[in-house]
Image 1: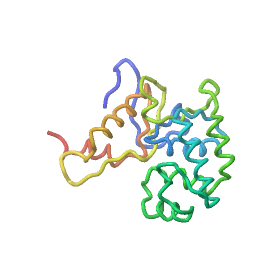
Image 2: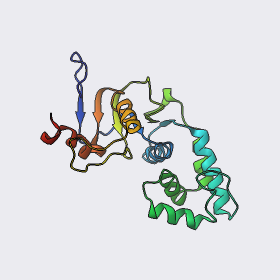
Image 3: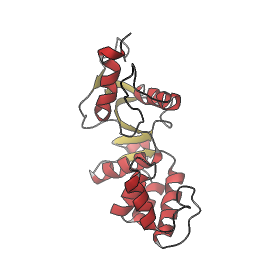
Length: 197
């Protein structure tokens, strides 16, 4: 990846302290990252599908109270323990970050945060899904974990077309600095000699 030659920019493999934006693959990860930023005392703005996050938390509260949920991600579970067991068995499941947050925090407080994310203008950091970041630019961007790819010894890492497009959107949002510290293996694979033609 190369930026515009007239701008001093770069891709860094070590974590930057104060990114302007943190881009995430899913709503659940974005919300989890925002809660983490708030706990560090940062003013964070969430650019994600907050209505979907709120709905999930509302329905999780029902399941925790041993009530049936009609949420598509929760309706198959009979109780909250089954949800937790599922996330232990499938830690990369899309609901896993939200379930972990609900386990560690008061769900009603999480619901309040989801419904009342700070405005972008007042934020120290913008936490955004890659999808919602389309058309936006930030001085410095950190890629959160959770993008899907794998190495099976082939010329390039295996990544689906949809994931590839999402990754492209995410890595092209930074104007000056792109922090890929959570994806060093992926970018090392792309630049290794066995992937050169």
